[in-house]
Length: 453
Image (cartoon, rainbow, N blue to C red; front, side, top):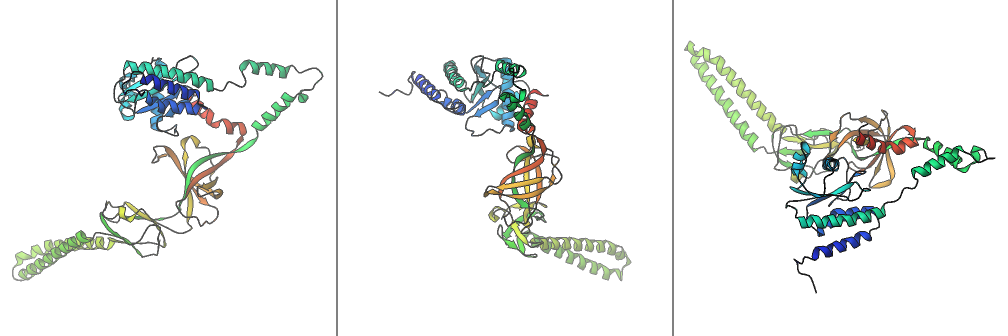
């Protein structure tokens, strides 16, 4: 017999189903996914975030992979830090609970009503934050607290125990000092392996970082709008080969031609008026004073007509050099008003290609002036395009995804037939460092960022 939609036992059935699911989970990542996405079966919400004190934001509802440096995640870490510091019990939260800029930004990132559910138990430090537009009822809060207790129980069961405890480490160090009688230190297996491990950790290796990159034109001719107006037509298609002097696109000339006709008529009128005054000045000297004024008026109209005629000539844009036309779909430009200096397209010379990469802020390692750069294209991941760094920008710029990165340009060492626009992963070669530094560089940077050393 099926349950009615308003059956009070329905939430308990959902709770049992979720409890069975977490008991069958095979990894911590699967548990984290269930916490932020499947909890919706117990109480509806719009957004959810799981946070652990040791790892920051671990999982977000509806998100496959978390980018640690995006503004939303940084703001969530600040909010969770305040909740952890205040030791707030499970219950509703909103913008009023966070003074200052964090509280003011609540409406930008989350719905009005939040619910804070700290992880129960002394061994777990973190919590689950749910947010929606409607207030939370006491029944929902009680049910979610019980569900989180079940989830934490399964989460602890999947935690891998420490391989080497502090007591075990002290005992092994004491044994290394107190060698067995009759054996030299190099004859003891643990000591030999320790020496090998230390030697390996201090072995010099190349410090490398990875960054998204693509093939771009090295020295393209940038075609910008020579005047303010509306583009009427395109004479070329994207990625088409063009010759020097070939028409590229044109502006709507109706308005410019009408202005030119008006200025020419005004010039003719001014010249006629000047001739009449000159004839009258032959018999009446009072008209001679007006000739200088009319001469200036004629020059003004002539300059205005010349300017409009020059605009009419510039309304037809031609290619300044041979190359390939790089621009968007022509249908997106036709009929669109453009401002003076706005970039319309680029003319790239075939073979004049270089690598452009975006180095994340956390990977800005010291690089030599001609550091080695290898681009592994997504279209051909088994081979690389080798280059030498030409320059690395001093200032980071914002990218379309909201992150900041340093622009890097590298000139190719050999000519290539690969087309412009192919993307991949650029590998940047730095100096040589010990292997232990190569392993611990990012963890140490995260620790320093967290503790403020």
